Length: 388
Image (cartoon, rainbow, N blue to C red; front, side, top):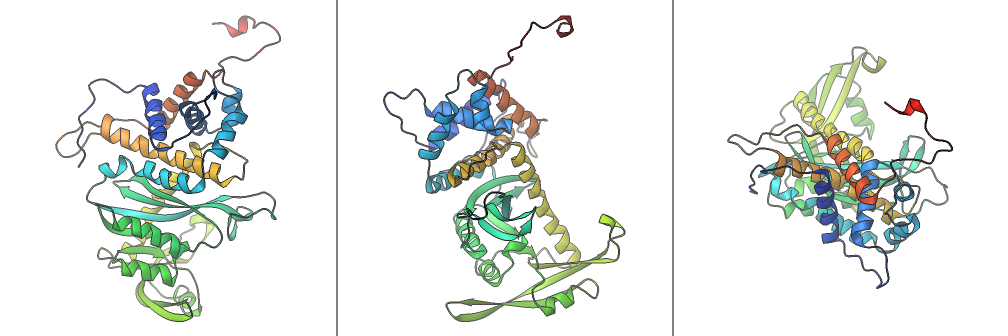
């Protein structure tokens, strides 16, 4: 277990920015010509600053005196990175330091994050199509693997998902990664996209406790989720691979609750969960434990606050923005635990330091490093109303 002591002084906002830029430059190797007037540090300062500010790279460059031209930065982002390295090195960045802070046993969450695409319907190569949501069926999609520890979420891996990828392929890669980790997986929580026979077979083969919502496929499960009270039933799904069929059987916990006008609905709401875990022995516990997964939505909300905006359809650039956004969250939690929290018997004391404050520190440091303008041209001098 990684051990550290409370810092004797303090961490300034420029040091936080330095930490992030150093983390990125240590893993990503960028080569420039001998006469290049730009270096990797500057590119990553712009990138981190754009993510922390929730604005575009172009916007940061246009309003900064010491940043390179926006076209220069965007050119290097498009040409100096590729999908394989961004995904591979990105996962290394996410796992660095974080794996040291995890306890011996953790819960993990596997999820798909769909970012809507509203462009030309004929130009959807490299996207992922799913059921309609937010006015579109095409999405920039990323599968994520999180560790959940004491209400905190650490991203361990992210993977771009395109048409042709299957949930079972994504899950197999994540489970393979977990098999090589030092910590023990106490439970796997998955969203409804992973409810199929192949994923259930994989979970059973890896001997992981799991919980996921069932999908109303077939008359049998539709009938079970339409009538009756809380109960546990045995259910099965049939799969086919290379012309061979097989069936996987698993328990389904059906939890019934009165809606009592919630969301303007009344009557009985029935929730079904495919679950096989030693700590789940009733439908109510299945629902309670799966509700832990909803905390992952907080990570998405934080990600929306700390990701660079863009209109590009370049998959490399978009994935790079996602990686940096998730890295900001991991670095914040790592610094909070390793440097800000006070070691003491019975657990560390976490001093108040919100993610919003962390992002604001990164933003201000990037503004200072890039000399973001603090004044705008005026066609006449300010009068007395501008003075105090």
